[in-house]
Image (tube, rainbow, N blue to C red; front, side, top):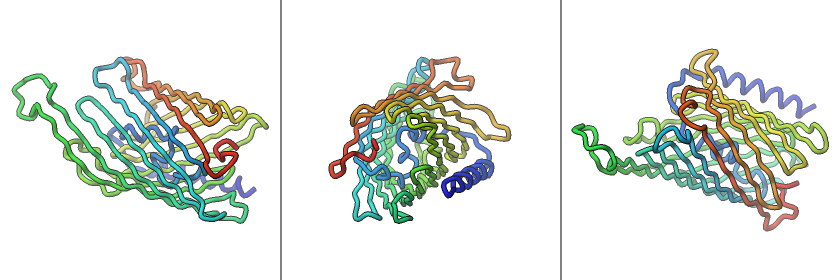
Length: 315
């Protein structure tokens, strides 16, 4: 009954957040679209919550065939968990994000720490607090631009380095999870891109429902406010025999009620021994879709537990 009540409160809170954000206008940073593979990209408090060591590589290519220099993003992450006692644990994470969009390229290094405590004796309900420091290196390359007489174009390469921080909280148990986080909190100015230094906020939650001994349904909802843009992701994931999974994620843009569809993401993945694999296809629901072949995501991960057997990631 406690889990049922918590899930109702979670759903109500997320719905309230959904309709409380202002008008949207711009596109989010591509790295934050990959949270379905690696949730700690949007909330550092999730680092170490799985209780094992995890290495993951993600590769995303957007709008394939639409135009030269279409956006592409790669993420390499490594996270681990360390227990100080039965009621406390620590998580450490390192993420390297490479994002290229035409002449604009950005390389980011994220260093994250999370502290997790148990809220009950059984340890089935835990609360995490996280902090992440980021260093961005941005490059704008105009050397390949056509030689036209335009004073704005310098036909050179401009670079900048700027720091930032992110923070979050994460409440999770065996049946549900919910998190709130803020990213780019320093809001350091970027003179190369006007929307790369703005604060963003995430509300992320879901519920695990055992349909049978072999089938688990995981509905979830994510609300994102980033670069003056609000999106909602309605997610539904099905896990079969703890080895195979599939997910559908519907993304909606809330510029004004009722808003408009943005994309439909279809994922499939599997766990094999200590490895995990996933593929995702992003079917755009905007006019951009007719110019290309959608967006594709690939993920490969490796999990291991030096001090625990069996690994908590594969209970």
